[in-house]
Image 1 (cartoon, rainbow over the protein chains, first blue to last red):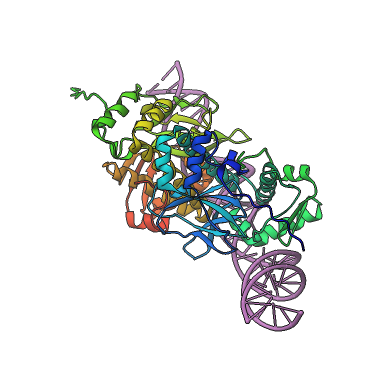
Image 2: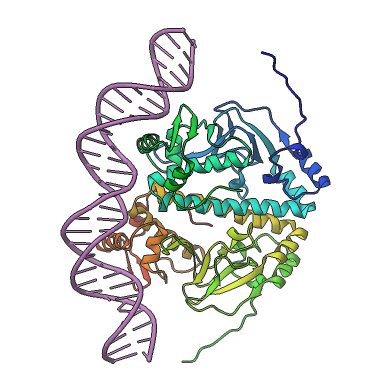
Length: 244
Length: 244
DNA sequence: GCGAATTCTTAACCTAAATCAATTTTTCTT
DNA sequence: AAGAAAAATTGATTTAGGTTAAGAATTCGC
């Protein structure tokens, strides 16, 4: 099948995620400096690790495409999932204070990332005050996001949590300019359950209910949202976690 | 009663909390610059606010003495408690990304804080790379701390949560050089319940149990730990939240 | 593309902690 | 220091979501 490949040279100046990455608010000259230190790696395939817990902390990673899961293991060796990262998200900020990565980060799908060596970023930031503000701002958002996630787990019912999760994924796709009522999400129900502090059985029961009520359908990694209004209602309240 | 008051002029160079504040790792000259921008306010009395949700974000606050509670209200107008801050802790980092404070911060006791105007801190940091690293590090710790708090709420039983909370308070006092088996903690059981996502009734029942088993005694804002080993056992696992 | 392994679903049952309710203790106000 | 208000305690009851179990649908590995 005739595949027309238009080749772009990837760089920060033409990256569609500029506004939500470190590049936000930088001048052209500073941008090209940031661009130089970014290490664009070949795509990771499903199951490949960005980093593992305990490895020496060297870089932050900006997700350009695909999806990344951040997790650790509990004392029973079960995965505890801390978050899913989609295009435009930065992975690794929780490890800045330490010599080592604090969690495991694995690709859930074919995934492209920009590697940003932290030492160099830090040096550059010393000359570019805007970049510092940008990093502070991202970290601060991460703190608030983390608090909001905690509220989700502690203040909401199982049904609200799941509805909210799916709704916020949809919003994220929307904000990135993708179709938000029908999209692929290569995340196991089991992993969603873990992230929302539920059992797979509970997730399954709720999805069956949503399906029966024609709210949405999630089968084989494909989500179709049939009734956005109803979904929002099940989620309860307005947006909480979702950035931008 | 004859009260001998030795008067120190408060400054960063003689502050006992230096090692856990922004001052950590700064040279003497930089330290005195930090010192100059710090605004030492008169003590707050119980119930006074450091800041309220929605107010313009201007400053970070370092707690020097007393205790501060960070909270917001849920949709039923009930307090949701996000944290308690003791001497050496920094309050307000979650608001850096925003124009406004994200939560309410109130003194639970007579409390002394250093106000650190963020704009000035940021300017100073532009000249003092060490200070930037220090801020990054504190923020990064806040993110990890927040993740650990979430684990506490979601992976542990009510009993483990309460045991862990009391144990970590004790550890904090120990690390600051205070008696850690008998100390005043001016926090309502109701607030601890909220922080641990429990009801006051559950907290009460667990405290009754701990009291009966001679693990500890918490009556009238005074905590006595009678059996540290047993308390640790009830907490399950090693330390999680507690910083330094 | 087929068989094995994983993941998902559905149903019956159970339990940790919430809720409801009534009393006692502590703290605040004057 | 007394009375009022707020907080804490204790017991009885309920419930959301976990656990166990067994079968069905997907996905993986060769």
